Length: 534
Image (cartoon, rainbow, N blue to C red; front, side):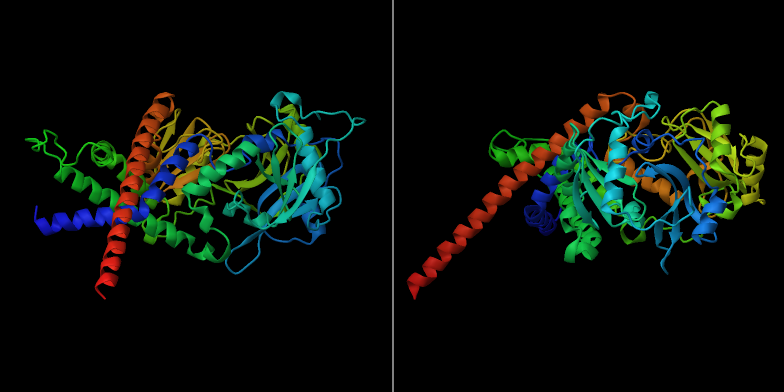
């Protein structure tokens, strides 16, 4: 290779590496933490298990009655009934509230139909106490852990915040501001409670909060979130990762060029460096430069930079299959009838009713502590089933000129899988089995994955998202299903590679510090010589 090009590669790697090696070190350390503990979250399972059982005998209004009395007209999104506000039954929903399609969460009293005001401190503490009194076990029938005549545990109200290091998630925006309540449990759990609805939206045990600082907070550079840097955070991460890719790429090339594959140097070594940290950096780099490059590159891809995964085509409309949008006027049945139907259908412990539109019909999903949904007709209140022929006909109608390919899968695969609840990508909506994968011949080659038992669209994957699955999720997490199902094989592989990257970063820091020290001493020496000649 041309000498000037070699020199350019070496200098690029050296000086950009000196500037970025500390970031590399923090990315590897925090990445190992995030293998086991992700961002604090209230998982789907935890939320259901800490909800009280809905009382079938309570005289509750229907959504049509309650929202009509509250003066809320027209479609809402994500309509639910839970006893989540101070233990009392409320309807919650999301309303569009701005020109940018921003959403705000609202709460309506299921007894009176009154639109509830922002949660007060008393309401917040009562919601926290309700959460604490239910032990979270599905077999407990939602029984309180203490008797009514026992002293209530002391809760510590810690005020309100709009956002803090544990609540950057955009999914929390409709519920802000958030109230903080410290629980007196063994885990020293901090609850975040929605100011708009009064329900618990996040729990963060002390260990999880502490590990968040050395995990997600470091990894995603959340020190730049909030304050004057907030608007610049995506740009900062993108450009640091871009420079990191350049550092790893040039380092790998230089390392290969300077390694003698055919004959050793005069010292007998195939590396030109003397025994010590520099040689170790060279050797470790040869083994781990490629995985370091893939991790930095895939981290860059996680930011979806420069619109790389944005499709130029309109998304396939799947609302006719399932939608969270529903006009409460289309839900006339009172909860008493719905809950009794769920009980007769075998669900004795109903903790949440969810309204949605399935195949154009108002539908209710009744959920217990285990999260298995029971499907009810929102108009008649009777148990119902989603018929395969109706679902197939609706899917065919989306692209009538090119009927989709429908495949039923009984096992997880590369594009449909689960992660452990409290890892970075776990704890979200359930991923039931079996599921349908429906492949459309639209411009984006869209795949729709849905639950045939409820008719719910679980996710959509166009060709750009499938590329992202390779360039970010696979290259960053190595989350192949065979590996995930063979723990600790996945753990050993990831930790060995991460420790290699950590060693590469640590030796780079040592080399960079030494190089800067030499430069500083030379500059000081030249300054002294210059002063002596004056």
